[in-house]
Length: 110
Image (cartoon, rainbow, N blue to C red):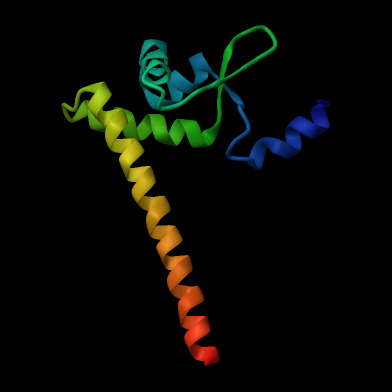
C-alpha cells in the first residue's frame, strides 16, 4: 500500500490506523485494558507486519463504551457482554425496520 492509498483510507472507520499506545492514550486507559478487551473477544485488533496491534476508529468507539461501563463499576467481562448484546439489538432493530419498510411498500402496491 502506498502513502496515497493510506491517506485515502483515513476516513474509513475500519482502517487500523492507531497503535496500541496511541489508542490507549486517546481513550485515557492503559494498553493492558485494550489487551483485556482483545482477550474477552470484544475487539480483535489487526496486526502490523511487525506484529504490533493496530486499532480502527470503530474499535476505539467500542473500547470507549467498555471503558465507560467499567468506570461505572461493571466488571470487564460483563461490560463486554453488554456491548455485544447492545450491538445485536441494534442490528435486529435495523433488520426489523427494513422488513417494515418492505412490508409497507408491498402493502402500498396492493
